[in-house]
Image 1 (tube, rainbow, N blue to C red):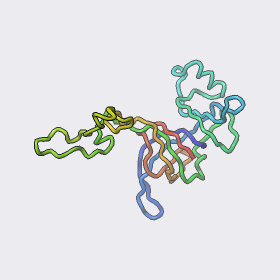
Image 2 (image 1 turned 180 degrees about the vertical axis):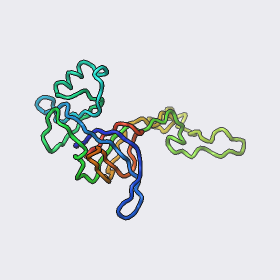
Image 3 (image 1 turned 90 degrees about the vertical axis):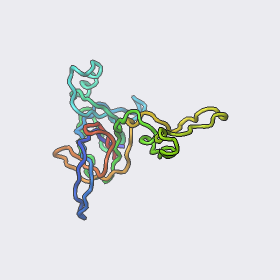
Image 4 (image 1 turned 120 degrees about the vertical axis):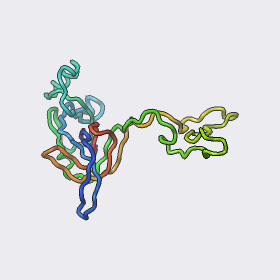
Length: 205
C-alpha cells in the first residue's frame, strides 16, 4: 500500500460539523524523498524506498552516503519501503502529505510506548487471586496457578505471565482522516496512534 513516513506531534481535539469535540492525533507527514526504486527484474519485488528527516553526513556511513548520492539526495535519518503508488516514481522525487488529500481512512504503524517489566494485573488485566483476609495478604496481584504439576509437567507456551510490556510494533487500522494541511505537512487523524510524541510512524492508505 502507498504511504509516507512521519513524526507524531501529539494529540489535540477539534469540533466536528455536528458540534462534537473529537480527539485527534497530529502527525507531521513528510515530505519524503524517493531514495531507491526496486523492480522485479533487479530486486525480485517492486517497491519504493522513501527517506524522511535530514541526517548529518558525519553520522552517516560511507555505504549509505553512496546510496543517497546515487539517488541525488541528502542523507536521511529514516528509510522505509512502500508499494502500490499510482504514479511512476524516480529517485530524487519528493512525496508530500497531499498523497492523502482524497483519503478517508488510513492505517498507522508505530512502536508502542515501553512500560518495562510489568506484572499480570497491569500487563494482562488479571483481577488478582483471593482477598486480603483470612490470613492471606501478600498474593493480591499474583498470577496464581500457571499449570499442572504432574501432567504434562510443563508450562504451556504462550501462558500469560509477567514480563516486558510495550515497545512493540503496533498497527492501528481504519483511522479516519479529519484534515490535511499541505502547507505545514500536517495530517490530523481521529483517535490515537501508537508511540510517544516525536516517534516515527508509517501512515498507509
